Length: 68
Image (cartoon, rainbow, N blue to C red; front, side):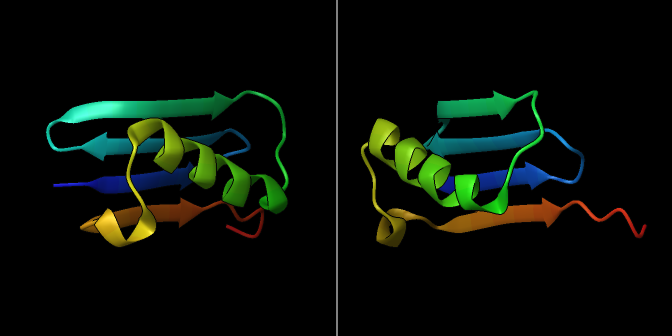
């Protein structure tokens, strides 16, 4: 099972890919991030895991909002 997870519910961005039962790529940015960075990190994570978007079975994401 291949999973892409994106965590941006705080000011720290995390992107991870799990391929089969192994975590293949994980990135965390301690600095404030911009939304434009998410796409590039997803591309990098998928490349590192040697899979494509169509290979994903699931994805998970949540986002940060200062209004909450």
